[in-house]
Length: 145
Image (cartoon, rainbow, N blue to C red; front, side, top):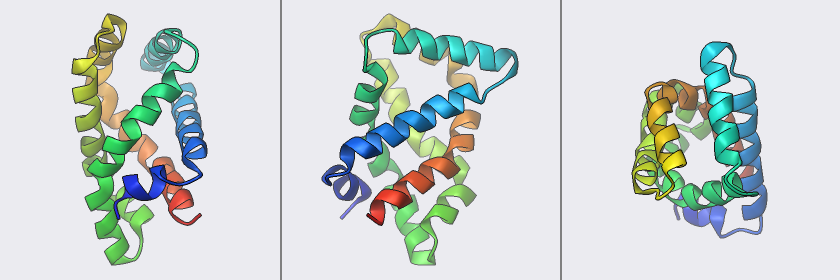
């Protein structure tokens, strides 16, 4: 059974989505400098599309994202530490996650989403890599429950 099946078919799906949204909020709020201001402004614009937009998107993106990182997670399980393995391979993990969001952004019929993503895509990998440790802990939390 893959991560998507294991995590999204559980009674904890809503909690998983909520934890991922909290992680995103925390990551954005922790950014500083000009790039942080830009990211915070862009995030506020995306959140302003409609109430619950971020959680809706997270819920839609989780299945393909979990499928994308499933091979990395499984390799880590074989080595005895899936969380550590994801963290130690944060570049590969970030690439896997961004491959999903790249497709999603291109398919978006909302110009604000597509335009914002395109503007921020150049720095996205660094930000995703920084979030991998906390994302891995969230996955671990729900694979153990």
